[in-house]
Length: 245
Length: 289
Image 1: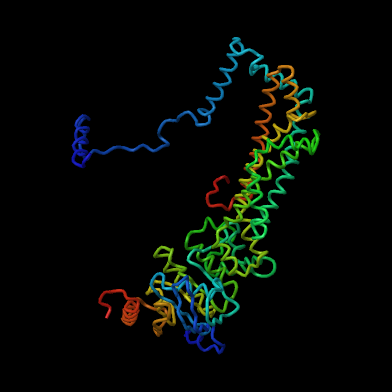
Image 2: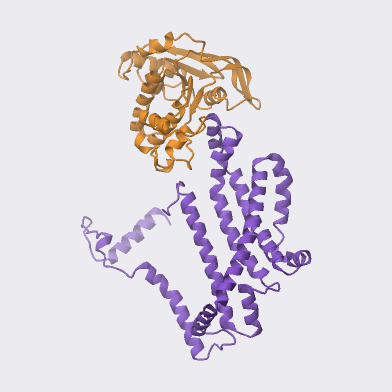
């Protein structure tokens, strides 16, 4: 299985965080947090709004240097945000290869866009893309950098339900092909269980719970084990839920 | 009014109308089938045409004496005469050159200062405060100083236009640079863009819409400054033509000059519009193309 393949890669950890703290004024959003992600591992990070999960992702993405503690991440990282954040004044293919060394390589951009299924949109302005297409373009832009660590900050949150299902399947497929470690920040419990090798629950500034997901892929929401894990995670998140167990 | 009162008055209203069963069907007519109306452009053209007509009638009946304002027919014939002798073309070329060289100098200074203070903290501290202070001085009030500094040749006229056009470009380009979406700058950084790359690929393109707004303002002000500048002892140009006409009470020539000023303003506005069409077609609210 692909999951096994990723895990067997013998390289040092993709992410090693020890004793991480981040305060905004007197409020310590992250408080002495430890986290390790193996190369090629797909980790989902769950937590209530404002629990600091996006702050953690921003620190790992080197967007927030105001932290204390030890953080080791691969030099090749890429981020996809909740909003696609495409440069509106650059054609889609130009957006994909923006920031890569050398002259803009159209062939490379087209390959990346083909991979996410919007190769035919290479020449348009970002404004004409639908929400799902724009998010795919953002994914292509992240993956064209061949990252060892891909940080996803609620990338599906703004998509409609049907587009979200397709986008989730796409991310699963891309992950299997690229084999990069992924940290997916989300507050959708089912999405986390569907995609991740391991689901973390963040609470009061630390990782409060690790839930390894041993289900075979592709995963089925109707699986009783799926329902059990979902119930357990919702308990950890402090959400009342139906008769899942 | 309470809800029941509204209900009651509504019921009273209904009572006055011919009885219509509550479930009556109405046929809706599509827009294409609703007989052709007078086209919009034609309706909008009626106003100006009527105005010129009234003007014409007033001057041929003598209600409007030629010393006050020449009639449209006289204006047209003197325009034709000025074109025939080549005076008008020559004047337009001279005035255009003045406006454009002033704009070029002023625009370059304005944009350069805006980039300096937009991109660097030091530049902001050194440049922005004096610029904000100076922009409150009405440019026209500087004419006496400009005459003392530059004499009465071409230099004070161009300097006045340069001064007037530098500020709108400065203010808008500066605001544009500072207004670039922070999340895009962040995205650019995660893509590995360095400072120069961010400036080139994110900040300057992001400031372009504002820069073009500034250009439009600057062009508008350039004509205004030109009109004032050409009052300074001009020996050529549309302003000179006008000053001459004033000496001889030629209101027809004055009107021709006014029309020329208006047409020149319209022409440069057209230029900015096409620049926007070329450079801003990526904007979500752009509808020109």
